[in-house]
Length: 427
Ligand SMILES: Nc1nc2c(c(=O)[nH]1)N[C@H]1C(S)=C(S)[C@@H](COP(=O)(O)O)O[C@H]1N2
Ligand SMILES: [Mo]
Image (cartoon, rainbow, N blue to C red; front, side, top):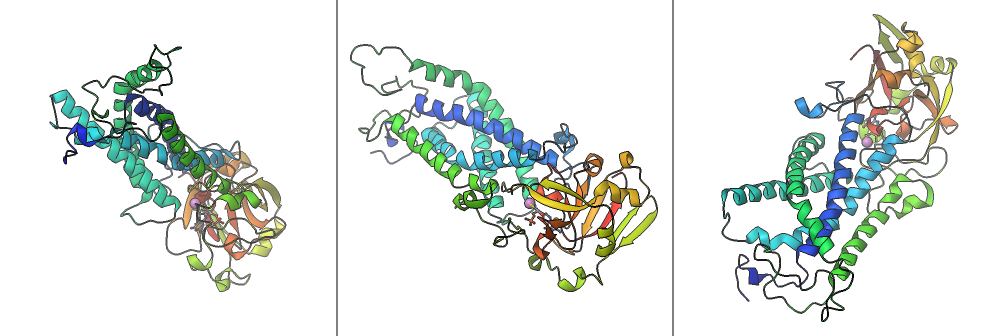
């Protein structure tokens, strides 16, 4: 066996070939397109134009061209888009790895460039492969709550996505026609005599320009279809062991691969996921006590201070709403009860239909997500609450006692807990 991986004969798997690569490529074409769209939606859902509070990616410039006010309907919107983004991203990992494996001989092929066009193509492949690995690795680390990279996950994942998608579109434009031809090529109605029983793509001519086909293949130990089934099985296993975190009850227990958050929520009215506990954010019982805690509402030059007892005397309303985190997990609807955000805007003089944006700050002094800005459409929605109760009981410390924000369709990060101050005004 030749020693050098730059020699085509070094690679001896009989599975590699245009058909195998094309099947995986078409799956990735569809899957990555969905990942890109749901990823951009997730960015829009953060209200990044309410700078600088929400935006973790400054200087987005033209890349923010598509941003729009994230709607409040349907209330499960972010649950769906982000659940799909994370679960599909995990499920595509085996497909991505198999695709890279299927073309790895090309990575080592020499000469490095046969022409200027070839050189440019290989450079774009570097961005494609590097970008794909970067996006999948940062994504997986983020859902594992493992923020080991320098800077912000959002910045890296956002800019990485644009670099990657530029290379991806280039690659797709160049290769999709060939991939589709490769797939059609093997769907011949009846194989010519002597080829009966051949597996798809088997015996396809090793075109000299296709470095992925081994010139000296080993005897197959598995068919190409079998190898694809193995990859697909891996995808299904990943999806099946992570999709559960978008549900409550016994289904959630099937989410073996995903962390269950900061604390085991247990059962009862507060028995749904807790990402960050009060203790982990430095929130003490002293500062949330009835004597100490006051909600400070400002706007239009006015300031109103309310104790929890005073808040409870305001008109209270109920909304059934989920919490859905960027990490892909979500809860089913919980029954929240509290004061409407637009009624709080009313306390400082805003008419119901003219409620503006609001900056919500928590008692938390350090760390990410201690404040968030909401858009006027979110403030005006009658289901948006400053919740005091959940499922019939006072909020527990971990769920944000004395008061937390809950907004329909919004990402979890906008549902600030341990709220201390709300500043109404155009942001
Ligand atoms: N004050 C404060 N509120 C916060 C957070 C936080 O870190 N601090 N995390 C947010 C995020 S990222 C999510 S997904 C939800 C999670 O709610 P839970 O921890 O109650 O499950 O709370 C949000 N509210
Ligand atoms: Mo979150």
